[in-house]
Image (cartoon, rainbow, N blue to C red; front, side, top):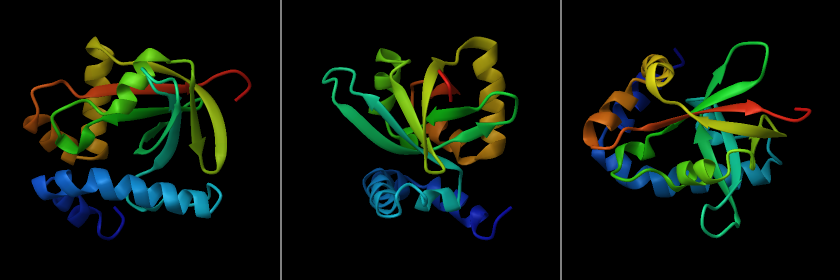
Length: 162
């Protein structure tokens, strides 16, 4: 485990972090990502991260969101996204956008744009991935305890020549 990860897990489980991080972390990530032409994502120093671009569910305007992800091993490129919203009440907007346009999403992974298909995970498949997510980043358990909603999990798979 990288130095400081345990401390970051502890800090990220606090309610204060949940209030501040959604405003600070994405703004910093977007700025650094843009300035480095997609080569650096600050939050990826702690967890792997990608930039998700998907049309808004209502507006249709492209929405770009830096997100932590769980890259999956295997023959095809795929990632799991956890809609934890830092343990805040509502689902994050990007999850509604993926539900509305599962084949309209693109991820920027390590400076490369990759068109993806998004699948909302449910049932036994979701349970299995949730267990993996808790091993990957234990604070997700704290986030789930704080909210009445089930945290959405999505699997993104490369599509069309990716």
